[in-house]
Length: 26
Image 1: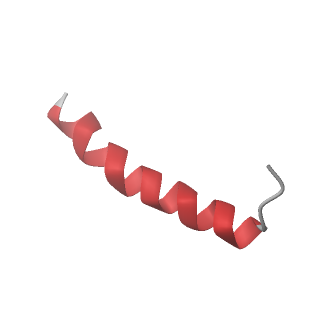
Image 2: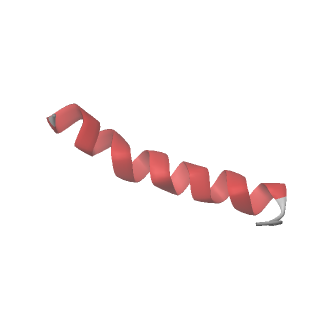
């Protein structure tokens, strides 16, 4: 995967926003 750094950063941000609520409910 040779995606531009800004795309990786955006994906990481989206994943964090998706997983944080799950982690809290655990």
